[in-house]
Length: 426
Ligand SMILES: C[S@@+](CC[C@H](N)C(=O)[O-])C[C@H]1O[C@@H](n2cnc3c(N)ncnc32)[C@H](O)[C@@H]1O
Image (cartoon, protein in one colour):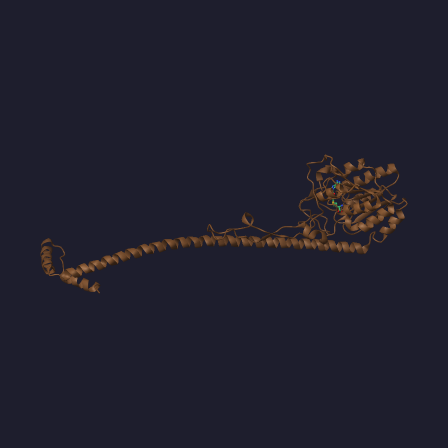
C-alpha cells in the first residue's frame, strides 16, 4: 500500500542518489552543440565535431561501487531471524535494492515491512504496490515515526546527518521505552563518508541551527576533512557539510551520542560498504545470538583495510575519470578551433574562386575584343592592298602632297602604305 500524504515539506530541493559513480558514455555532438558547417555551400551538411562525455549511471555504477544496504543481506536477515522480528521499518528505500530482499524475507516469514521515503523511485512504488506485505509511507522519517506502530526492527538509511539520525534514534527509543523493549536497529553509513560528516538530501528540512555549512558542488576524499574539487561528490543530488569531524556532525557521531545516553544498548560496527551499525538491547533474549552473528565482522581490521583500499581506488578512479573528461574537453575545444580555421579557409577559397570566375569572364571578353580587332585589322590590310594595287593611288598621292604643302599638313605616302601592306599581309 502506498500512503500518498501531501508532504508538508513539498517544494524544498530534494536530492537522490548515493554519490558520484563512474559514468562513461559517448554521445555524438551535432549542430549548435558541437557541429560546424565546413564547406560553406548550400549543399553542405553539418559536420560533427568530436564527442562529448555523458555520464551513464546504469552502465558502471553498481558493479564498480557497492553502496547499498543490500550488500549486508545475509547479516541483516540472520539478525532479523535471530530476533524473531515480525515488523520491520526501512527508513530510506530509494529504488528498492534492499527493500526487494527485505520483502522476500518478510513474505517467507509472514512478517510486514514499512518503507518510509519521501522521494521513492517509481521502481520502489511499483515494488511495494505489488505486495500485501509492505506499506510505503511518503514522509520524512521524523514525521512518520511518531505515527507508526513500534516495529521489531528498523533500518535507518535515510538522510545521513547528525540531526536526522539523532532524532530518528530518539524517536525509536521513546516508543521502545513505552513498550519496555528496545528494537533491533540497523544503521547504514556509520563509516566514511557520512560517519563523521553530515550530508543532506534536503537541507531546508533541517532546522538552520542544526544544519552545517554545506556544498552541492564540491566533493570529499577519505584523507581530508575539508571539501575538494572532484572527489566523491553528488553532482547536485545532495549537499555535504564543508567540514568533516567535530561535535554533532555525521551518522556515527549521532549514534555515539545516543549510546552515551543508553548504556544498556550494544553497538556493533561492520566496517565496509560505508559501514553498517547495529544497535540492540543487551537484555533482550536474542542479544547473544545477534552478538554471535556480528562478532566476526564487528570492527574487523581486515574488512576495514579492504574498505579503505576500495575507497582509495574508487576516488583514484574518479580522479582519472575527471582527468579524462578534462582531456576530452580540451581535445574537443582544439577540434572546434581547427574546424573554425577550416571554415575560414573554406570561405577564403570560395572568395578566391569567385574572383577567379570574374577574371575568367574578363579574359573571355578581352579575347573576344582581340578577335574582333584582328578581324578588323585583316579587313584594313585588304583595303590597303587594294588601294596600293590601284592606279589612282599615284594621282591621289600627288594631290595629297600638293594639298599637304598648301595646308601645311601630312600627306598621303604611297611608299608608306605599301610598306604597311607588305609588313602585315602575309
Ligand atoms: C541512501 S538511499 C537508501 C538506499 C537503500 N536503503 C539501499 O540500501 O538500497 C536514501 C534514501 O533516503 C531517502 N530519504 C532522505 N531523507 C529522508 C528522510 N528524512 N526520511 C526518510 N527517507 C529519507 C531518500 O529519498 C533516498 O531514497
